[in-house]
Image (cartoon, rainbow, N blue to C red; front, side, top):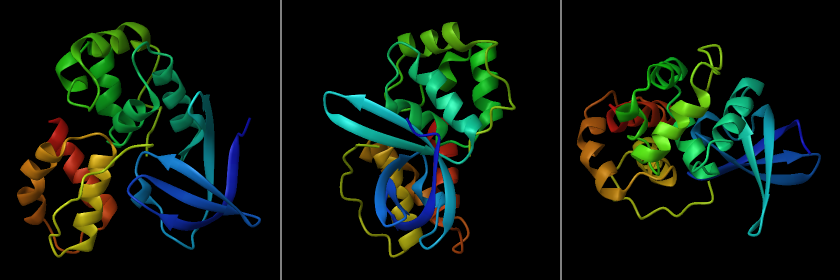
Length: 198
């Protein structure tokens, strides 16, 4: 079992990052790959998942992120893809508040989370997580129409990688195109998540 890996980021994609640790490249699924930059030395906290489909590594910026992901996985009906999508919002206070006050509508905005699952999240985690739990997949992505803005295109692909449908992403594309042109991919993803989950 891994606690964390420390190495150099060699690849960033909408689905994952690749971390080179002493010459071995680890493919790691993360909530927001574009938070990372290639040729960056980082420590990534790791959750290892073993299933019939094989072994997968999930990475997190902080130990708290990893622990929260594992809490979400303990909820019946929550898989790795759904847990990553929930955490990608980088809004720990909003998520904790939604869980603790039983805001089902907020939780069902995330892909793969229906009303029953949202109710189960509240039932299992209410009053068990706090705003100190700060946040910072094997998935398919449909082709996203090129907007001429690489950062925006990467962000739209990453949102689909998190499980949002192409039609949902298409609806917010125009609004994202109106924001500052010097946005990073990470900033576009954060802005997109706010639009998709409000």
